[in-house]
Length: 277
Ligand code: C2E
Ligand code: CA
Ligand code: CA
Ligand code: CA
Image (cartoon, rainbow, N blue to C red; front, side, top):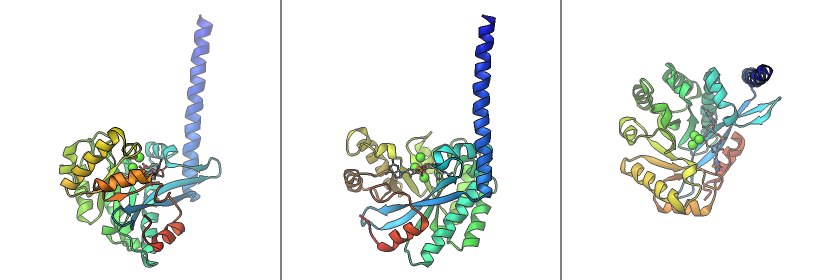
């Protein structure tokens, strides 16, 4: 029994060591990736459902790693967040996104906003507002053209969140609540924080127009409208989903039906073509 116990113990330590090693290697790869500029942004159109116009874009980061191939954010953002690498990575994303938006506008695209995702650690950073102002100054992008997307969980318990959001909003930057309805949500947040937009999580769009999704989506749209907030539905893939949302008064939509995330060049071409729906 003693020998067996030891066997199990060493099995666990080996497994633990292996996963710790994989993590450390991944962290080192991420760090190198930043230095070697292996990250890039894709952009997905956000469409005005009333007329099919592309109102703006959401920037979505990708990692083209020589070791791991093309890596999607769900596989590296959590680790970047834990290790603090999200700070330099997030700075890069913000600057690159604003730069692209400024270029598209100079090239004649008529877009209202570029949306950038902020993770909790980026949001908690004391210097966030200064960073944003610095990037806007350097890229020449008007503050009103930048939208930051945060999740409800960022607001939950965050010290000084209210103050930070007010500073951001006072500088002209717009704030969207991402994945709305999936987090530690509280409707009180909508009253308390200076939010301009709700993004209906794609898990509530998936089964539209059937089932409980129809009720939830309808409820979110009416809350948004009652409070004077813009509302975007994420993950629209089918015309029936789109028709339902539009009929219920949802202002904006995003999803494969309108376009997948694409390179900056392809996004510009799309934006110059005019309405898509
Ligand atoms: P998110 O902010 O909710 O972004 C939307 C995700 O849904 C994107 O996945 C997008 O490609 C995907 N999507 C868009 N339309 C459809 C559709 O019609 N159907 C389906 N099934 N999916 C759709 P992606 O690019 O893999 O990003 C995943 C998550 O990673 C994002 O979720 C966001 O939380 C995070 N993320 C992405 N880029 C950044 C970034 O630059 N910084 C931070 N902090 N997080 C990021
Ligand atoms: Ca988002
Ligand atoms: Ca989302
Ligand atoms: Ca999400």
